[in-house]
Length: 540
Image (cartoon, rainbow, N blue to C red; front, side, top):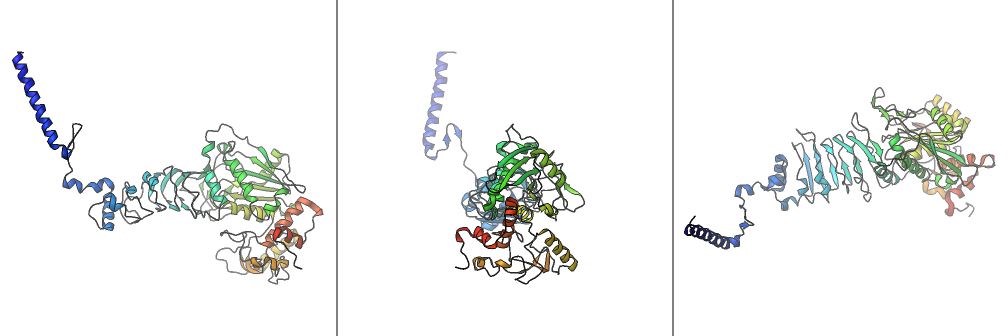
């Protein structure tokens, strides 16, 4: 190429560069060009569609627009929404729900056309959302970081997997959690312990279980998942030695806890040790703890969970367990198990006869229930079953302390029963109660001078307990009387404890076993034990 042609080409390119520089300088105030990338301003029609990016579902978008009285959704107007109730509408997704950054209450009901939609993970980032009611709506899994809710109802759904450890915010009060009839499989054992230990604060709805057919909710321990040390079947841990009296043997073991649950410091160990602390967290047991020798026995079941039936005919969920513990009917709280086999298992692995001792079996089922083997009253061998339900502590108090240690009768009336106790039932009960000296918290007379707790009636030191004769007990509305309006033997309501007459009966039973014949019950001695620093003789 000739030199003069090359110079001409270079000259043209220089002029083009100069022209581009001039154009760039002239347009710099509008900042259209940046790093050689052309930015095209949005058209008017595209501005109208920005709400599509915020809320992708058309029906949800239109509903929000109608509620806000706007044509276009923006970050600003969405931020004004604090409560949202979506009823009888067709939503395919809740993507973008976090754009309602100040939302504190969300209700979804009767979602037509899309019965199950993906649970939006972005809910975990909504700092103000504390109330969620959306039964029969979601599918998928819950985010691991969920927390801060005071009401969380997502039951009857296709949600699955483990319940997030932080779902139940331990700083919140009055948490209501409804996840029943879904597909959840695991609840962290430490969360379970926090809820059960503070039943007065955490009124956790008993709707954790059962889950949908084919699914079962059990306890798990994230901390022991990688633990390769396990308790052997039948291994015994001596948890406490008595410090007073001759010692009363207490044996605690589990059913429906497989090898994974028996990891060292795992689910079974945490549940059993927690049960001990809860047993002795209520009076008079708290003041009687020194009289017990406590043994933990690690029993390994082939499978994890518990068999139960909804109709009493076929099993909704069937599991092979060590002692064949099961709930024959979901509407019946009673649990059945191989009681003789359990007593033999205890003797075989501890070398100690359980006769005259206390046996507590913990069933791996979050469905409410329990039972006490009153058939062993003749030799005072206490036997009870309690499930790991949210009201676990109160179940322990009612079944293990009330029935199996104190041999107390139920003080409640069966729902719908308004009848007088039949004469033959009354006579049979009265004969047995006198024969074995038990169920002294009910009487078949309303004469305040003839009931077993007559000493308490009119005692000014117990005026705040309103002790008297109240009709209704052992499932019958009439012809049976109890000492107080309410107690843990009558209801699971908040703040219920053992009445003073019941505390006296439990005290008498424990002291008789611990001291033998040298113990002689005396009312005033009990009152001094019961009232402690508040005690004063009536003569004063």
